[in-house]
Image 1 (tube, rainbow, N blue to C red):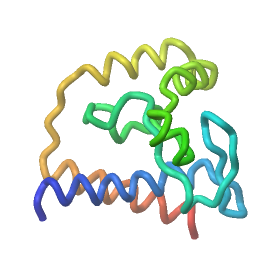
Image 2: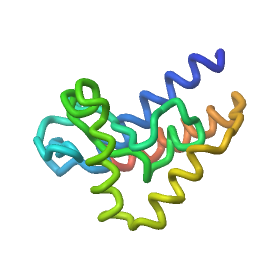
Image 3: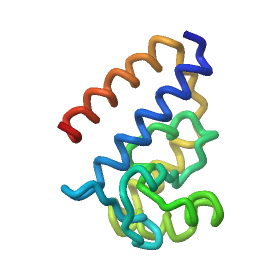
Image 4: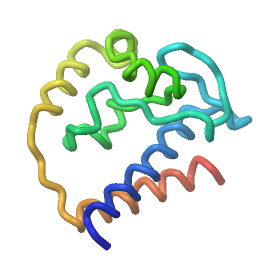
Amino acid sequence: MSTTKLVKKLDAVFSKYIRWYYADDSGYVECYTCAVSKPVKEMQCGHFQSRKHRSTRWHKNNCRPQCVKCNMFSQGEQYMFGKLLELEIGKENVEQLLATSRKTIKLGKVDLECLIEHYTEELKKLTT
């Protein structure tokens, strides 16, 4: 499988994992930035630091569920996202995320396959 296809597959499984990780028992999840509650399938995986930064693209602390309005039409509500994240995980951890996002990492096919396997297993734990 090509690297591009592996990235897409990892994005998909990681997004499901993030949404289900924060979902309630009825399959609903709250948008991190506006608090609207919707079924997991109607939500997205929002990123504090842009997905273009591979070093934090699949970092659990960098991602939270977001509605389409906040994530797509309001560019992820990055300022609000950052403020809420700071309250949740602390200023030091947010600063560490920012520093990590500036680092260049190169993930090979084996790395991507391992991440896919890891998040697939974690997702199974949440949905079974």
